Image (tube, rainbow, N blue to C red; front, side, top):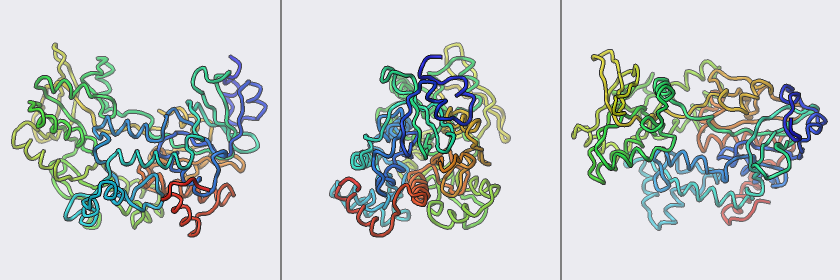
Length: 505
């Protein structure tokens, strides 16, 4: 075993003594709080803690990303939400501004010298579609706040290997720095607190598509909407083609809009077959007070969750509910949905009239390939005979994978850290987003984002959800003496510093 690397004894020990780490030659650095991830979840916690008076010298964020928006920007771009497009988020959901004021609509109106964003907010959703910010505005805002709080001083690049409990309290977080950046392969950060915001472990493929890709080694014609697939649109711009789109959420609607935009803009002859597993024909829900609109196969909802999930009646219900009831509530309100936007609806109407968009409800049995390389999708349906759809490409828009065993750090926590899964298969966390079972003396391990779904808060995988988690975590850390409270005086003074773009105290 090379000097400065993990030894068999370390790998098999769930609790590490200081001497055990030092005897392996792994450099140890003390840091009161470590955040693992480096995305929007890490950024929001560090932002809140800086506002509450924690210096940059007391925190580190460990990440392979160069910026907190890097992964988010990549996923939005490849799923057909480039920087100039509007994302699915509320005007007041600002990762860079815990107060939510001024909102994105106010900022956009000021920057563009236009009252249109303000009028849209005032008349939404009856007179107009819901306002949502452009992706570029979100990224610029987060960059401004990252500069203001000294985020770059807290960023340590590298791949986190594991988090293990420390004998006597706290944790060791093992980091693999970039090759050649230090004398040893690993370094360890010894901390009292650890925060995990690791996002989704990887891409999720439907079983039949995954089987086909593995069997045929096909990565060109069968693609996931969350992986680079610009070649699909490029090939369709050169010759007529058929695309099968699978999925019924926001990403499927964005992929369809890209295909329809290109067809209209460049006069293409693209044909679209859209496969729905569940076809929604109209409004649906258990009763009039919990019902969403739907039609033409889609379930319509402006945001990923109803607004009451962020700070209303639904949030209160979810917090008080048993795990079983939470699972039922989540299935009702957090299903696959997309916003009902006027422009996109008009495009679909024209596509149906032109007979080049075909919506089909069916189950896929298997995927085959013709001798010339085209794809054959075999389907079955209770209401019609088995069908075959020959296409040039298949775009899977069914989402991201969130199973914990797929992520090295989360899997290690389940095996060695005392973490346990909840009813949704994610990390079980307490009211302050502390990961239950991972306590280590006076040390605490927290988590936020997708890995905490299915607990007391529903909308964890959203800007407001990650901000809510950050505020709750900070409240718990304040009770433990790590940071200051956020009373009215500090809140007002810190907002003024935010507005003036001055560093927090």
